Length: 320
Image 1 (tube, rainbow, N blue to C red):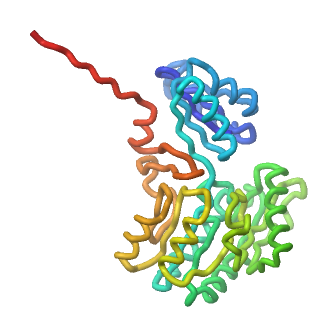
Image 2 (cartoon, rainbow, N blue to C red):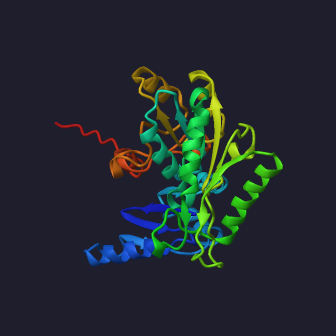
Image 3 (cartoon, helix red, strand yellow):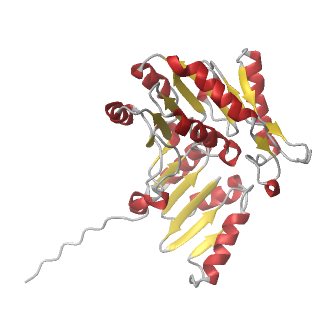
């Protein structure tokens, strides 16, 4: 769980219990550059204890939460008791859609990076790959070669991937891959954990799977690890049907040189962000980010995010 809560002109941040050091450092830097005491507050602890207490606190005027849909539901229910507005940035099962006319030299590295960045532990990870039938086999071959060259190890080695956050997350990835074996879902390629990686670390080799049925949990549930599921489509309508066929709607990537198709896809994809011939957090803090469906509501970044933390007040003065 990670969340920011606004109380008047004060911000209270409750980071995820497994990743709080970076936020504590941000608070230290804020103090060093002259932020007034009490403007930025970091409160650490477990979600069911600290997070729940903050959510229920009458002094909190707005809640912005990043995490799982299930926890997002709990927070929304508690906030509704006192009519506290919420911004929810939840899970994702984001598709990368590759048409036959795409620039594959540009697409391949972006597709790989979108699933291995932060070892796949990002809500916007490009975890589903939809490929037009005519280029399905050649693109999988190129991606397979790229996956086989990926290396996983300690951060100090500056490789392609580091470890997963904790043992339970690694077990979750193992469970998904076990389900793939049971369902006879074929593996195209897998990266390698280097020999220097300590056995006590939660290192997970990135895996590319093919012909994953759209109804399988690998295509429906968020793995939050470096697992990419590929499938083919026959035409634009079929691609849209597959892309929209999950409970999530956070990000999508579209790879095509056809300008008209770019706009049609962007319009009909049910998600909060669409990247055309690129993928990732382009635009920095200026680009609004958020989802629809079970990926949440409201926006982070940009002026849209600031609007969520403000309340419009109308003042009418009679003169004379």
